[in-house]
Image 1 (spheres, rainbow, N blue to C red):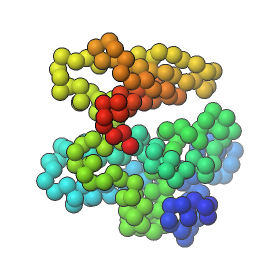
Image 2: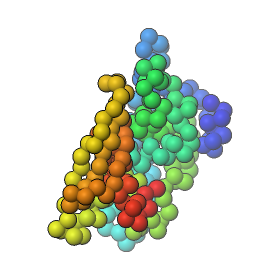
Image 3: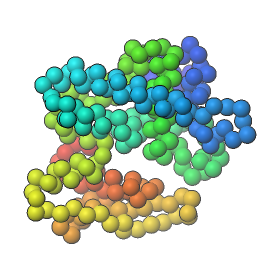
Image 4: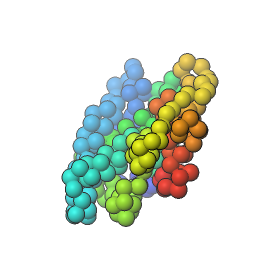
Length: 226
């Protein structure tokens, strides 16, 4: 616990909040413990208000629709996962044996949810300013936010928007390979432009594999993807 607090630059007055934020529901079976699901719910709202205020104050000439789009990209699971990876959050999560054995410490949804729960724990322990100080360093620089190419979020949507600049071009996805046992599948997806493969991605779900394929395609087009 101390190591994580040093890593995030915040010391908890009530460490029980931190423990709860790191407790996945799979770990609570048969134990008198709270999972991080309620904190995740609160953290989602805290993250949204902090990001909304930051965008509102710093992108003063941007219309509401664009601000909404940028916020959605910053607070979605695909963005929160690399945020969590930056602080090695998976190392500290309490997981049940099943999740532990099937790669739960690096599962996108588990890490993203734990990151939101951690935000809520900091908020409850230290208030909105403490939460803001924790969140803002993870956001891309303002110049990347302004040009709409920070690409932390839904890579499939961003790729579609890039391709739509040429209406005759058509994007499609295919699952090229599937391996592993039922509880621990791995998928390989291709993204095709007019029938030609322009990106390949691997994931623990078809959705994740397609997102990673889109991300590779975007990177090969010369856009930053992190």
